[in-house]
Length: 123
Image (cartoon, rainbow, N blue to C red):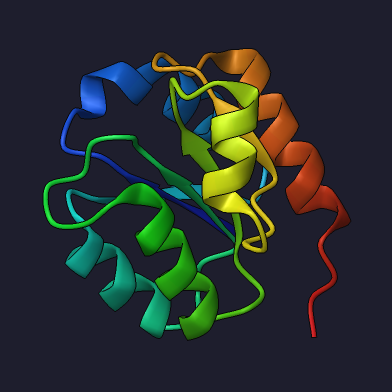
């Protein structure tokens, strides 16, 4: 089963995304309310994709992505951001972030994540 970690302290904003992900076969959703919890989940080695909200309480979202991929380089990521395309690219350069999500991710964003999961190679 593929696991998607959603890191946010506002889970209501992610309800459509999470329901769409959970409806997919062989996909589960885990939740973390801050960076520390996300890193603990990633340390277990069972996370395939992480969705990182823009306003997590204990660290910058791009710093969390940096730490997640240091913990497990196989984790794909998406970041919720209102930064301009240029600012987003600059902040996330070198982090391999798959895409930027809007503040209210929807079912179509879940399909994008599921496409990435479908193409991941399991070793």
